[in-house]
Image 1: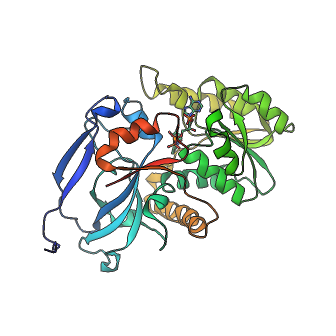
Image 2: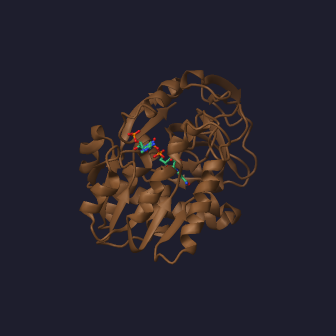
Length: 346
Ligand SMILES: NC(=O)c1ccc[n+]([C@@H]2O[C@H](COP(=O)([O-])OP(=O)(O)OC[C@H]3O[C@@H](n4cnc5c(N)ncnc54)[C@H](OP(=O)(O)O)[C@@H]3O)[C@@H](O)[C@H]2O)c1
């Protein structure tokens, strides 16, 4: 029997009930409301496991909603229903969306204005790896640091979701990349076109040898004491782009404090006459101007999808795991053994 536009849809959702280990995630079912005017229903084909969910399950993500909630930062899927005022031509189209939460679901109601078209021929899981990672990497590289062909950058966590995308985008733009990762990921990082540096060794010393004149940009999601080295490694005119505090993931206490401390430090560095710049990148920062925010997301993700569709950048899918096994997927993502992104497939 074919479902009509009126039949209720029961979505399978993964709920984060509170601070739990990955095996504490719950599989639940919920009847979806009909899409309101301007909204659509998307049948999710792929949704990513990001570092953000690792922080959320510890209650450590900067502005996460109160428990319980459905996590899931981004997704790719097919539009199956449209609300009033939405172009019917969207039905059956493959789209991507950045959700921050809610993506770990078989079906989801979204605003049509937040959808970005996925080019034909791009596999849904492959496209998924570029949504939050591609937008973040592209904006940091081209909108914040504005790195140019022939310059040299340092990418921390070059095997991770954002890191592996950043390395590839930079290489595609003719930029020389040094990438940190653990020893087990050395070959994967080098295969992306970066020069590998062991993050458990003396990073400053290793990078200093590779780039004696300093770096044009450093991308640091680790924070903590190591951020001082990230700043010191810059050449005059260089830019530090800080975008996370992974090193404080397991620290007890207020989840906002590490970010606020980091912001204060970056602000202080920018006031000193050191000819270097320090930025904190926050993907959501421009959301107050929603029209511009959506335009930039569509433009930047469109550019990354274009490079993916033409084979210039290659999706790093670490594993495809059924949505209902989200706990296992999270354990894998947190194991430190993966190169690229773990993708959930409903
Ligand atoms: N500011 C923003 O708007 C924004 C947007 C998106 C993402 N982010 C941030 O981007 C970061 C990466 O996200 P992702 O989804 O790409 O994560 P991911 O795929 O889990 O990758 C994380 C990477 O960081 C490395 N790492 C983790 N803890 C580390 C530590 N203490 N010291 C050194 N390296 C460490 C990991 O190495 P191993 O594999 O060896 O563990 C891995 O290479 C996260 O911190 C996330 O919060 C920020």
